[in-house]
Amino acid sequence: NDAGDAEEPAGVSSCASHKLESMMVDRIKAIDNIRTLLEHELEQDNGLMAESTDKIISLEQDVLAKSQCIAALNGHVANLRSKNGDYARELGRLSSAVNELVDANRQII
Image (cartoon, rainbow, N blue to C red; front, side, top):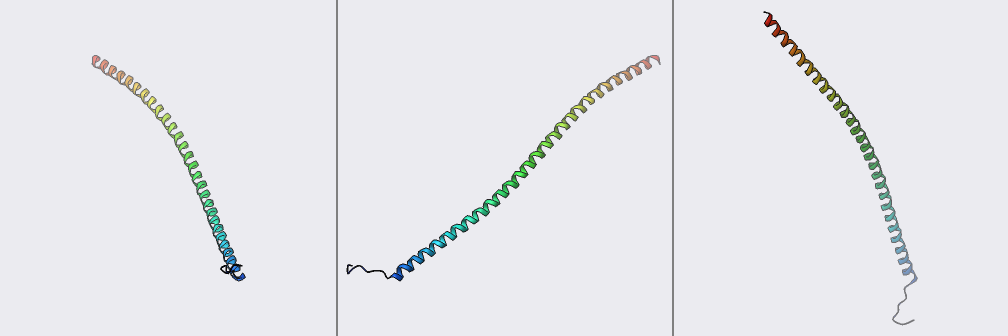
């Protein structure tokens, strides 16, 4: 042993070892707490994603149903336009026939 080297007492080394062990245990507990919090957040995120996915699917179904209704209404409107055209032509024929009858009546009178 050199005269300049001081040996640590056994208690000091043991105390430092316990302190280091305690710090490591605290660090492991903190990491475990962080892991638990992250798992909880992941569960919440998964729940929100599932909820959002359900809403998106529901909205897609609504859009599809409304698109089908719009297509049906467009067909109905086209049918009504066609009938309206038929009625307009028939009305034109009737109007011409009435005019001819009125003209024929005037000639007779």
